[in-house]
Amino acid sequence: MSENNKIKEFFKLGDFGNYFVRVFQKPDPNQKSNFNLRMMHGINKISIVVFLLAVILWIVKRFI
Image (cartoon, rainbow, N blue to C red; front, side, top):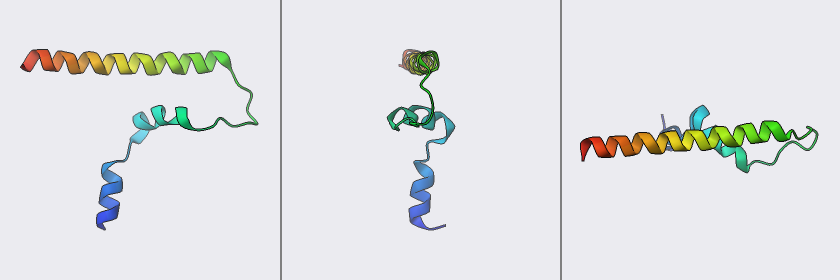
């Protein structure tokens, strides 16, 4: 495996990271926009971020 491929593999986001990156992509103009679906994804992203912050804070309080 070349050095370039190792670096790409190290920074690969996976499914979890791609969920957040999709926000910056332009939506398909041929697909009808659904307000409820966009709000659901927004709430999901907020809840994931809050959960990760809580886990990080819990770990910091536990070990420091």
